[in-house]
Length: 317
Length: 150
Ligand code: SF4
Ligand code: SF4
Image (tube, rainbow over the protein chains, first blue to last red):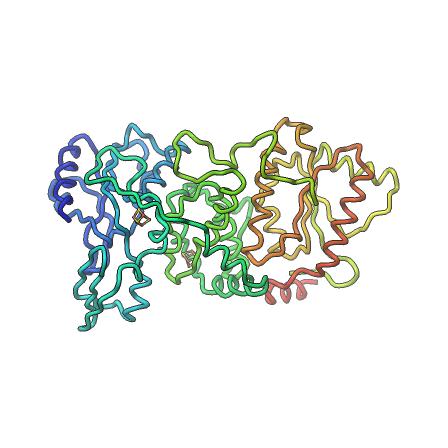
């Protein structure tokens, strides 16, 4: 990573004016990374930038509103920032965005499926083509595209949409996103679709990691999942409660979700939650020609209307 | 999902106070014959209808949900139903991926004077739900629980 040093010195230059800069550092093993809140030069030396930097750090920003914050972002993370700015959940004046072009990140879950056991990861070497993982004494050479996060396969924003300090050459490889995953799922019979979700929701442990990792879930202690008045959900561990929570989560993100995939990445039991949000995004794009997190000055489509809607024919039933 | 047995099915209707509730009343005053499966919940405006009202009804055992408000441009609060139109359309398109038949949910506009239109809307929606039959049971435990209380 030749540019990492350049990135570090840029951050060092800006740090005196900032309360902190958020980035990634090596985690508890060579495969896992952790967010780091850099407040000193020594912290900045720990910064890394690699395909293992999976977290969307924008999630922390709404909580830090009012502070001078620097943040290191990938392209997809920058969409979350655009959406947060658009909804005035953060202030642009307080923010310094550092970025570099992105080659994609890994999916730890896909690596786990390929390797089996990730309890003792000894070494990892990652580049744009391969990821070499040594775990439990065995080395696995994995093709990057096989273990890349699904979102990277359809990424149109390798270069961030917004940044104050950009290091490297802008790179955009607009890939197609035809929502093939959504269309394929909808080709299943209704019974199969329902059964699929019932099975998935049965696994849910109601930890709310999906909500907490989501940069756009900003209601915090007012989340309807915990409100007693109105009492939308009980504390019972039933499939309907868990299922209804996911409907709430999806509906509250309709027209706002930037598809960073943090919900399903953070889910400890691997429920494919992004599918629900992508379905809504597909419909919203068709209805309102709108993609969340791409324009700071836009209004989320469900907070707006047109007197004559071009694509809604509500009288025809 | 269906909570009832017998000839009626359970259909939940969310009606705005100013137009559709009045329209239903007009139909009643006019003594139009209507099916009786619909349970009406009166709301101040179709803009007050959170799509989650509809989803919660469906999850908790409704066989169908009908939303009706003032015609676009006739909203008592000027623009409530414009917002509703977007939300309800998005909601309707969301249902298939959940494994819920989107025909179980419908939204429409009926004004206070349109008693005849209300009759048509209720009759055809109820007929549609009867054709679809009781909604599939989401969770057998839920049904058992309900049976135990009754
Ligand atoms: S979605 Fe794009 S910007 Fe985000 S990690 Fe993947 S390649 Fe990078
Ligand atoms: S992260 Fe997964 S297990 Fe936890 S609440 Fe969300 S869906 Fe359920």
